[in-house]
Image 1 (cartoon, rainbow, N blue to C red):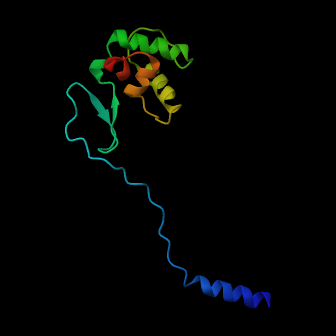
Image 2: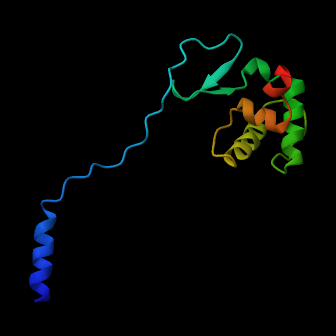
Image 3: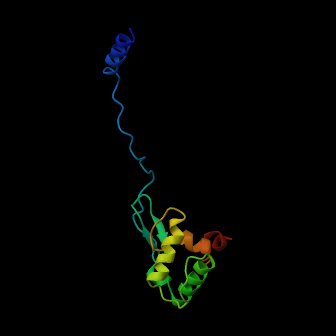
Amino acid sequence: MIRLALVLLLAGCSSYPHVPQPQNPVLTGAARLEEPAGQCFDGPAKARIRILCDADLTPARVTELQRALAARNLYTGPANGKNGPATQEAVRKYQALFGRDDPRLTWPAAEALGIVESAAVRKG
């Protein structure tokens, strides 16, 4: 009796409608056609994030960055203003805490570290 019920149950599954595999959601919004002059971005066209350009990484700013990362126990080298491998690895570790495993410093991360002026401060 139980076998018969199981066979009938399984036989009925073949008519169950096909459910497609889940897909990543489609990002909405228009792609940025032109990026503002003097700003650098990374990521796909519909999900760009601002990063610090090479020109933004002056020796003075890199020194601030190194001190900010050292205060968070992520950087142990000298605060010499050189954006070398140790500094980039510390940036990668810091950003990995927030889901971005990349040695290129994002603008929001730089704001959080206090090495660039926040957009909210500039507007106010």
